[in-house]
Image (tube, rainbow, N blue to C red; front, side, top):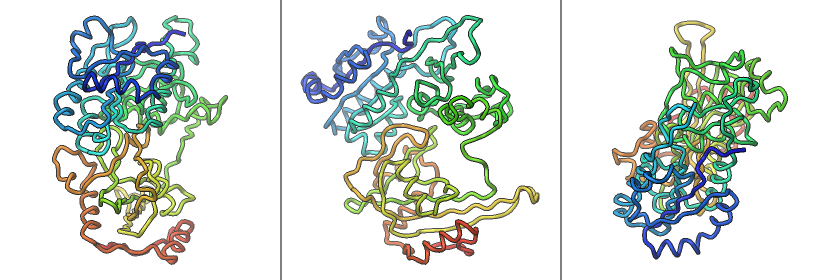
Length: 430
């Protein structure tokens, strides 16, 4: 099988001396790059000429900015960030049968402690085109093993079976023989890793929706949808029913069925040692927010808060109290069948292990997480999903009231899970 990405990995360091040190210290990269059959080429980031490189080469499969211990912001702003932008702009060669896409196929990975910890610097790297900013060896290994599995080039023969057709990524030139598999290369594994930070580029045609008579919410010119969200919410992984995945989609079976009532739990996580708050970067360039999400049918709000924080940020937490509860109910357009009830719990928590590294591997949950000083949120260049983090972080920082999680609260939560009668009045500690 031919591989459709380019067989080259560029490793960048700030100086020639650091380049030599990195080639020895970061030895975990060598066996992995050899296993992935990527030709490794080392460059000094300060002297690399992207225009000259583009004249004789196609965009590399991997660009790895290996900058351990570089804490000088001037180096980041004058060397590393322009390099990331130039690498993302390298043109792809034109291939017969493939339309031009807005991104090239290079996976850009930045290894630096400061960029992983400073929310503004991290945001700048992502905005310039980096796919991942990290300081975790495990996350690097997982990302590379997922990103560089063999990808099959499309077959343009007219007699190819529809079940063996290829699916193009709508954002870059990658293409796959599987649409939703999680055990082999597919759009499901590719999109969050390569395009989790891409702006919400809507589409009005889904190749799988056109292929089968599905009852899902199809994208259309009148109602376009962001493709990764559409794929995740409407098309099941093949492994759920290995021989019946198409049948499941035809019946309109989804991962979660819509419910008239929605319950959400979000968490304000503060690290006691330095007072920093945990923030996640939402997918699709939606901005930074605190961890949290929808409560599953058989969960208590406390269980959902712990689970969602782990899934979205990679941090294990201990709940300390309840900051806020609210319930909103009503109907849309005065119709009884459109009645709804939304409930929101805002919890306060602390990390169980302060040295636990936040998540840096992009997926369908988030693009990553980091610890943030309250003062950093006042920077106008940091995009927030809403102003709520500022409100609750300030409330906690100034010693605002926190309602304790007593046994009574937990029992009421369990009772409300079954009867829907939890907290008949709004509780707000502001």
